[in-house]
Amino acid sequence: MTVPETTEAIAHTPAQGARGAAATSGGNRPGKRGGTGGEALRPHAEDAFADELAALAAADDRPRPPRWRLSPWAVATYLLGGTLPGGTVITPKYVGPRRIVEVAVTTLATDRALLLLGVPGTAKTWVSEHLAAAVSGDSTLLVQGTAGTPEEAIRYGWNYARLLAHGPSRDALVPSPVMRAMADGMTARVEELTRIPADVQDTLITILSEKTLPIPELGEEVQAVRGFNLIATANDRDRGVNDLSSALRRRFNTVVLPLPATPDAEVDIVSRRVDQIGRSLDLPAAPEGIDEIRRVVTVFRELRDGVTTDGRTKLKSPSGTLSTAEAISVVTGGLALAAHFGDGVLRPGDVAAGILGAVVRDPAADRVIWQEYLETVVREREGWKDFYRACREVSA
Image (cartoon, rainbow, N blue to C red; front, side, top):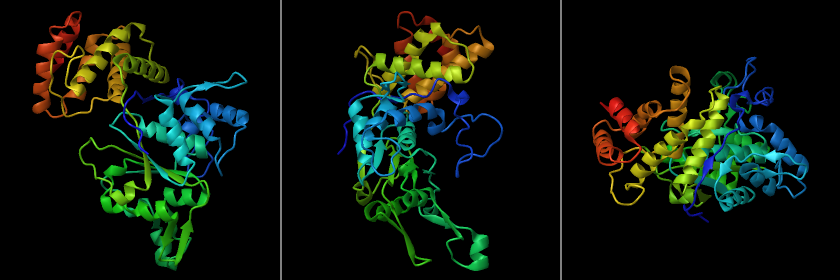
């Protein structure tokens, strides 16, 4: 079943950011980061939200699938937010249609893998991480897909010193995150599946269909125990992607994560995220910055939709995706500029350079599109004169 791309969606992170009290709680667990004596710059979801996960587990009296830390209902509540009977508030990690989250969680409770599909910036990675944290209590069984990802990253590798000294053995074998998840009944994650070469992608077919990973060198196999499943993320909009084979795609239930449906929804999402990130970076609040946030969102939406908000002017779209995540990055960068080199108030000059960098990815074609948009739309828009001058200055 595929959920249609029709409504808004985006991720939310904790207000405490890298200062989360649980940031070091998993330091002694196998496979987790080593103790450095300092706070993690970006805590894993199961650490940053450890208190919420514990509260949900304590209040959760619904049936749980084998080896799940929470019931499907509690996992959905963890992602979407809510208030528990004891008064504990669960913050939303994802803002979007409940049905999308329910389908994703239900998929993981079956023997079918989950594919989160969407354009860049639609919170695929964030949702993947939080699903794994809520289901298995560990989001670190991760394969990061790139053009150079080898087959060993999905199957297994070898400790070559032991292999040469003693020959093939279990001691010489280095399990992949997927193999570890199969053996322990955990949730594995594969990020950017479509960036992985097609022949390496297809390594997953046997794993997902037979729930078995053969080790021919040892004449053995690893069989997945109950609780194992896999979450993959992918997009088909960026350059350099590899289409999934039909055989592999059939092994996944695809859930499409959409962009926010309305400008107001996107402004609200960007405002919340910028406030949260700003606090995590010890940046001062910028209550007067809502106008600049609205301008950034408007520019991004108009250019990616190819039409102005009022529908009167057709526009050329640049090569970039101009996602909500990029808008958040632009405004956060502007807030840092305002805090460190200005008076703390977010102004057009603070976001202009970030917008230029996000829009003009192809120096030749995109610059022409941006200049045309500035002169035909921004220049004539009432109340945007300061914004127009700031953008012209950095574009010169």
